[in-house]
Length: 174
Figure 1 (spheres, one colour):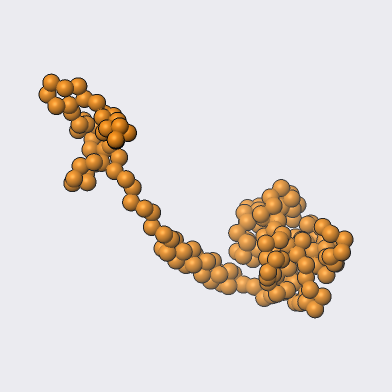
Figure 2 (tube, helix red, strand yellow; figure 1 turned 135 degrees about the vertical axis):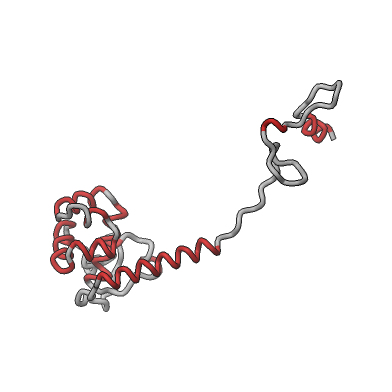
């Protein structure tokens, strides 16, 4: 981090992971945290210590919780521009943006958010570019496009030995 950039406006500056998780859990509880973040340490035998231990080991989960802290708990506007790709601890919060009251969250809102994400992902999958047609391999060179079985291998003409590479050789000779 550079000395000329002021990170002190970032609510995460100087805040430990345990203090942050404790603050969020005290306000929302583990059930809401799991519903919004889908991190199993908030569902399976949840505790502050086990969650902090997991978050210290897992960057993606820690960044997810830090972003939740900034944008749901501290109710700051979402990051834009060059800050969008930075981890939450390294984001620069403009001086005119001040933390607000925690957002009101519910399990119903979390479910609606997840359904909207699933619908968006399904739409993305539907709009993906279709794969190119595969070239016919050695087991699919029939005109009826039915795959050959291994027992239906091409056979040599009577009196000649079968050469599976004959076509390739004749193309390279040309």
